[in-house]
Every structure is written in C-alpha cells, then in structure tokens.
Image: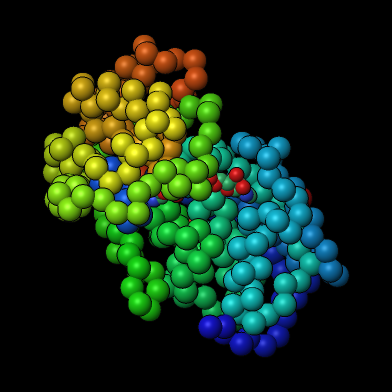
Length: 318
Ligand SMILES: Nc1ncnc2c1ncn2[C@@H]1O[C@H](COP(=O)(O)OP(=O)(O)OP(=O)(O)O)[C@@H](O)[C@H]1O
Ligand SMILES: N[C@@H](CCO)C(=O)O
C-alpha cells in the first residue's frame, strides 16, 4: 500500500537524525524482544538543487559502507519515499557511525531506521509517517522487528507480527538493570546466523522459551535478581554456537559465575544484563582476564528515547 502523496521536497530542506544501537533476543525472546542502547549513529541529510546522490561516511566501519544506491540508509529512505508516493530528490547524506557492523548490535536496523526517519523529516508537511507506519516500513527491509522497534522507540520493546503488520509494546526497564556489550573483532552476518536455525524445534524447547520469555519481562521491569534464570534459551543460541565458538565459551564462563550473559542479536557480541552496576564490572573483569585483546567491553545505558529527527539548518550541513 502507498500513501499516494503529491508534491515534492524543496531543495535546501535538511534534517538531522540520531539512532541508537539495539540488542535483540535477550536470550529467550528470539525475533521478539529488543533493548535500545546508548550508542548512536548520526546522520545529516540535505536536499540538493538537482538530481544526484552524495554520501559521506565517517566512523566505525566507514570503509565497508557503499556510497551509491546500494547503501542501506539510502535504500531505506527510497523505500519510504516510494510508500509515500513522492519522488526521491537529489540528496547529500553525511553519516557518522558509532555502531559496529555485523556484531549483533543492530547496525543494519539502525541504518534502516535512519533512512525511514530521514524520509519522515524530509516529507513533513507533504506526507505524515506515523509510528506504526515507520515500524512497518523498517520491518519490511530488516525482515524481523526486534531491532528496528527499540531503535525507533527506545527502551525495552516486545515486537510481534500481526495480520495487519508488525506491532510493538514499549516497556520501561528497572533502573538496576546494567547492560554490558562485549564486542569482538570478528564479525558474523545475520543472514549466516539465520541459515543455521532449524525450521522446527521440539515442543518442550518451545515451552522452555515461553516460560523464560515471560519471566524475562518480569526480570527486566521489576525483578532483576531473576535475570540469570530468565535469560536461558533453547531456540537459537545452541544452533549457532559452532559458528561463534569463542562467544559460546565466554557466555558459558560468565553464566557459570552467575551473570546473565547471552548472544547479542545474531552475535558474535555478548550481552550481559547485570542486575546492578557491580555485576557488569565483574563481567568486564572476567572477560578481560580470559580474552582481553580481541573483546572490547562497552558499559552502556538503556536508551529511553529511540530515534529522533529534527530540521537542520543547511549552513550546518557539511
Ligand atoms: N551505518 C550503516 N550504513 C550503511 N549500511 C550499514 C550501516 N550499518 C550496517 N550496514 C549494513 O548492514 C550490514 C550488517 O548487518 P547485519 O544484520 O549482518 O549485522 P548487525 O545488524 O550489525 O547485527 P544484528 O542484526 O545481529 O544486530 C553491514 O554489512 C552493512 O551492509
Ligand atoms: N532476532 C535476530 C536478531 C538479529 O538481527 C536474529 O537473532 O537473527
């Protein structure tokens, strides 16, 4: 369905977009649960006087990002304009990236959300893009909603697919919950990780994950002391472990010390959900002692705001 908009975006219109990283699954909540984290990609987008596409990228992973129409941010922006029924104008896009690619911190989701939000800002007054539409457009490109929902709305999100499209519920997180993400130098594509999943699982494993997912919501919003039990999983991590053996080994080690460690998204980064700040410092110490050189520990806060877009003066656009 498209919005059949009329009109075009005037030259000189410019927006600034900020999108948080996200960690999906959180153990048992495969393709459903996600948490926004305080690490951000930023973007300036300006409408040119004529046709064209100029993309500049700075920061983490900049060398790997295409500068043409295969760029994920541009594809997402163009997808949103196509839904709006408005032609894409010539654009200058300047990206500053902090979210590492292919680690399980929602870099593709953030790029997609950046494109949707940039389009939303540029189309303001021409075609309005409501929150539910933004989630639908982003999910169409990402394939599953568990990263794009927290990237869009912030905090902890439950996302699910309904006949009318993806839906979400945003929840506040208990203030004791203290995330740490341990990021390795190695990467893992989400597509590869998903290819390792079986098409069906034993009924008892499904029951196991239903119980832990329900418990995990209680642990995250009310009872962080339950996080270790609540982050157990039988739906995805064991099937993917052979593709990321060091991640698997460190998670077992951390969980053996009573810490709620899980694969972050499709990996290979590790998410530790401390029930208080001291727990994640303990996780940081244990990781440094075991695997210092190739793992960077990020002590992050939960982002409660989600993606933002604001008009931007062109004088300030590089
Ligand atoms: N800022 C960006 N600009 C353009 N493309 C990006 C950007 N960030 C990520 N991408 C694209 O997304 C790909 C990584 O997506 P992938 O789903 O494999 O990993 P991820 O999103 O980091 O991890 P996960 O989905 O497990 O959280 C990159 O190889 C690149 O093609
Ligand atoms: N739920 C997704 C998150 C990564 O995009 C997966 O684990 O494949």
